[in-house]
Image (cartoon, rainbow, N blue to C red; front, side, top):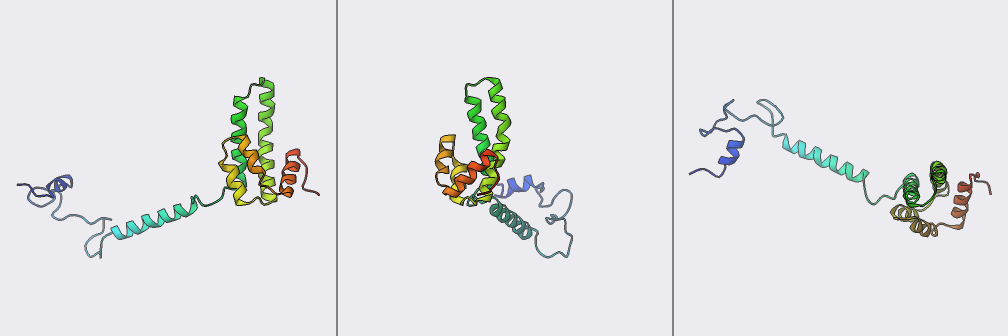
Length: 158
């Protein structure tokens, strides 16, 4: 009768007599020779856990999107709307040419007038321009004025 570990032993290359074909004893993980203390598994598991923890901190879903991410989302939505719009090619090209400046103005207004995390989350999560405009209602009057000035290409003077 075959032992319970026989399938594992066969996969590992262990001969029926109990020895590995190439050597008399299995090698330790990590290629360490005799005299090494302990297995490499605890170090590997620690390194993997550390890497996972660092990645989780960097990519936390709790963090609010940056002003640049909000502006990039605006541009994405505008490009989607433009693709669906029934306008002539010249108008489409003219609008498309202005989108990068609009994106940059929005990012600047957001950063300069310090939009709240709540507003940035709302704007980044919206699926269309109507939702974007709805989220903009959460801006303060001063922030809306700054956005309007930035959209017109004006400086931040009172």
